Image (tube, rainbow, N blue to C red; front, side, top):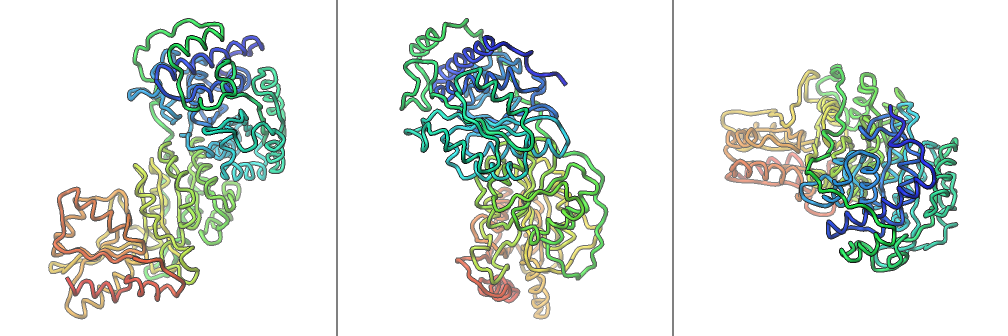
Length: 619
């Protein structure tokens, strides 16, 4: 692949690059009428040294696997990244003048629509985790590529930064370099540690990093530090760069109250004159340089059929682990992360078969989710698992993964009140709502081992964020091993010409619905049982037809709060095709639960077969 965006430059040439990055960052934000120029000015030497001295990448394909990667964790400084990409030839400088426009790929904060961007940033604190995922992905693929992450000093107050620092130090990710732009100014005032550089240095060093302090607005110091970082073996490197916000412009340097403010045209003219002037940027012809496509899941052979027996008692979380193990044998790009619960999520089943592709993320869910984004950007297929309730801690990271359109796969186990005695702090009762709200996300809720394994395979093939909800209790296998599970889709498990109502369940509640159907049949009442294994997307027209065929009456039973779960998913789907059931019963967990046996809790909150039967009789 090409060596880099440029040939090796002299220090004077690098200084000129930094000067132009300053000018173009200010010109772009003034043209846009908004942005964060002073945050760009402090980082000009850092960006010049990275892009024109250190990094090796192909400007024709800056996201290519095998090339060095860059993550702008301080995403509000996007204009200086765009200026560096333009200076490197990724797109013309004229494109900078479309910053923040509706028809431009150059958004206010970076997204992967832009060549050279692997993950959306702007929600601070997440970039180092993405970088750790990229670096880990390069290691898995035995690539010599390096990863560089630029952070702001304000954002290192975020706990996730230190989750990532601990992980990278523990694994000795020597192909990862973090540069912290310590300009001592946040949005509303001075940062926590201001310019006490030794505090930042000691914190990184304590986590196993090679850490050094430099003058970040000295191009020779930055280039030298990056050279030393590349030569470091066995540990990641942290460069703590002392800078001034607004550096290079007399009326901006180290001045408060300029955060997020574009310069006026007169202020811009004054600032550019201070920097020695620059030729005008030509008009942009309007051609988009957005990436043609983002990484997609690889093709791989069909997963061999499982060998479960009907009626066999298997927890869906256990089937998840079995599926990963079997998938690892045919999908070399498969990697797995776990949050110190591998013996509960059964990620350990894959680990025993493919230990070099399973990584312990420890109790750091935010880092795990963002690392998965980095792994996916290296064209790997990441699965990450924890208890479903703990994934709620990482919702912002899931949200940002959605903005990145990252193909990550998440599994939340131990969902619902049915986990039993551990109590409500361990019960995920909001997770379906959380993941359904992510645009384009696919949400799966299998009821048995066969459907779990088939859906894990589907997740690995799906070009979207996927979430699977698995349960703690063992449930009987109800499907044959050759059953298929189309997406969108559901399964009709029992039906007749005189069904009184359709009972819609998923996971553990589906089995309660099947029990209820048996007891109702003994009383001469027929109900239609439907397994909504795919909660999002839903085949609305097909579901509406099934409801109409069951007396146009609907009973939804779910081990989830009523807000945002399968009930509201089904109601919205039906409404979208103008289908309004004549009668509806929605059985859900309607209060904060507490400890108890699973069957006691299902009954207390109205989810047991007894309550389902009563609901059917009342319609």
